[in-house]
Amino acid sequence: MGRPTAIAGVDVGGTKIAVGVLHADGTSTRIGVEPTVRGTGEANAATVRTLLRRACDTFAIVAVGLSVTTTVDGDGRFRDLTSWIGWRGWTPADVLGDTPCELRDSGSVIAANDAACGALAEWSLGAGRGANDTLFVSLGTGLSHSLVHDGRVLTGAHGGALFSGYAPPARCPWPTCEAGTVEDICSGPALAEAYQGPGARDARPVLDDARDGVPAAGDVVDHAAWHLGAYLAGLVQSYDPEVVVIGGGLGTGAPGYVESAVRIARDLIRLPFASRVPFTPAALGADSGWLGAALTAAHG
Image: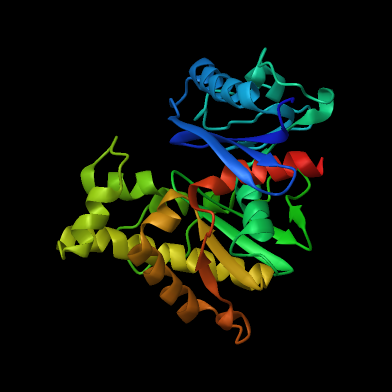
């Protein structure tokens, strides 16, 4: 008896690379998770290939979806504007190399932004299931969003309708606020640097200290929560979604921070019907990226 057919999903994020497979009956299997090496393209590609080989050893992989923390240009190359994963100018084929998967054809490897993949996964299988318009917000190493309308991920004319975290911050009640983008205030590394200084990456100390009542930590988290709330309010009033799903490592791992931001968003939303939109944590957690990538590849 041959190996069962499956579609592989690869999620390459700011801190981890995860691979899993989606089966024909809709079930899924997680293959493995390894850390991302910041700015080192060859190391990250090698990790992807190693995890995919594990999948190919067990399943007949007929398509591969890549969820990446960047977008793809018109020539099919990764933009990787911040060089976070080290793949600027690479193609999906460059990443896969000689991985021994039994792909159907050259079009069987599809890449998409991680927010778009997370949105599709949550709309199809998770907290946005049953909604016609699901807004997915990914909060972790970065900050981005994606809207699924009637099963279609809306990505814009250049595939860039995702980078809302790069938007200038709203007018702020903190007189010392000088950050250039919302992401520079609200993301995990931004929280860490604001509390511990340049080079800090782990937001857990500031979140833990804020919860324990340390004033300096509370100020950092309160400031970020205000900006995150203003950001969410702007998205809700722009897109008019049925539900807002908040995912990403920080989005699902820091409930107090997110709940504070949601309260602020409701205070700032001026449209009565929009103020009632439900905000909910992502149901698929850390699996949403690779599941969404596999669904993207399945849909072609």
